Image 1 (cartoon, helix red, strand yellow):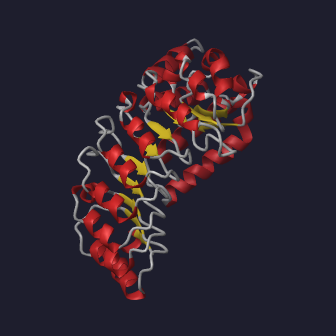
Image 2 (spheres, rainbow, N blue to C red; image 1 turned 120 degrees about the vertical axis):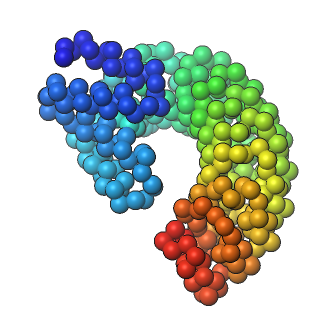
Image 3 (tube, rainbow, N blue to C red; image 1 turned 90 degrees about the horizontal axis):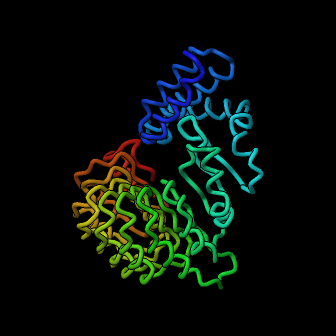
Length: 341
């Protein structure tokens, strides 16, 4: 096949960014073209596409990730040349499913250079905006924000004094988030009022993963999130260190607007076995495949509730939960290698 076919392959990949098939077809074509660089790139595409559909931490996935890392050590700088040649400040880039996918830079730099970024790297779909206090309001005016599927604005402020609630307000009111499937607002001092504004953000209707960890949400903040009509596609939720307590966990147990939720991380929220018992009895728990309860004093009460519940859990983390040795044995007998005690 002539080299002119390459743009046609890329057009198909860009038109269906979540579909691995066009990428794997392109990998076959690269093998047929047959240069050493082509074969290496085809191997990267296959390794990363295959790894993503395997369970995290599985032996096969780890082997594929090592293969991909070795390929990137040898060829990554050359493959990233379209980005590095732009003379735009950035901290880091990453390949995903065989192509340049994410970049870490300031929000201001992104907004000022977005057109040439996407012209050079049309596969770009994720950005981590570093310490973006006082920058998000300008970012939300950038039309290219709608090209991103993943946005990380965690730890907006270093000094602890910037009025970052205004940045979050601007982001949650933005009308350019329709493509967003992953959002990280960890460690952004988001309280219950901020959670209510997030919950009202219609642009998050396609969101699949939300990291709201290390924010003082409390019971009221979690309750606000749970009332959202726009999080029905959410499959992953991280609420680590959000000051939930038993009241917040019970509110979560009563959630009716999270039908797709499968992965829930609740590390370090000071709830007890009482809260866990309420969660285990809920429809929310019945749908979960991954649950992290580590660093909460659930004791043998919570352990007993988990051990006796019907579940489809594929992984359960109850490390540092004040569980007795006998309760750990009961959980190990119930869940086998699926549980970390």
